[in-house]
Length: 300
View 1 (cartoon, rainbow, N blue to C red):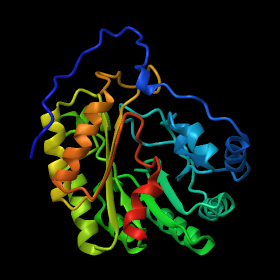
View 2 (spheres, rainbow, N blue to C red):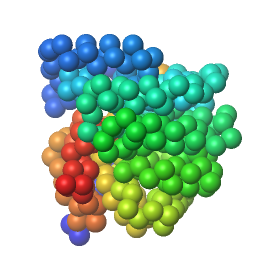
View 3 (tube, rainbow, N blue to C red):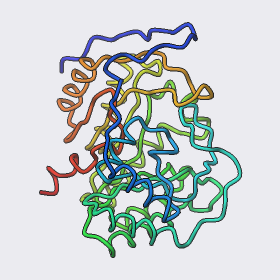
View 4 (cartoon, rainbow, N blue to C red):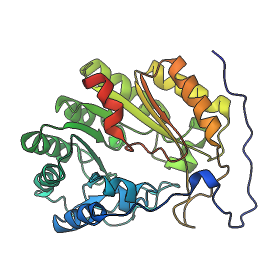
């Protein structure tokens, strides 16, 4: 396999930098934007689009789609890259699954992506709440369903419980290379468990499509990245997203390097040669960006 040439990280000096031209976006116009945002507010839901300050939020809202974030809007972990609120969590809302389903129905979604804050304070990490959300969406719509849960703190029974709910796609983001796990994902994240999860999912239900995503520009080298992708393929992961890490606020990790589009293209081609069935690779790609397009080839 021809690998992209390894590139050492370019370390910035800490001063504010203008975004490269390829990361600049036009804000889409139209009422669909307001419709989606208003519906989310009306139903008392959270989206990772807003809470993680996704650069694609306005585009997705304009297309009447969003990634729902369940189990509240406060996370129990302090990942170095994420700006979702951390601190004291609130009790799980038993009505949330039905409201997610109602939002999906009213938006006319063909593919529903459900993620969550990490809830290490719950015995099952929130797995049962995910299961009830999958069931509610399935009752209300004919959409395919993608779940993007935490690692459930190594709780194998929690993973099994969600696999048994049979979502169409089980997504868990590796986020970065093993060397950077502690800095990027925090002390509780465990790279071997990330790989074991994918093996466990495929062994328990081989019809579920498995998916992962990584952020680039955090200091990884090309060799480290390609080794990580090889691990993920071997573990049974079939779908991949690669995108540029963007610092959401000064409190999060700085960007070490802006990866140019042509390098994303080369990495995408390399990932396909390695065995990923579906790959989305580009500066503004995110784990749930155009997620329906990634499952369509397998479901049509």
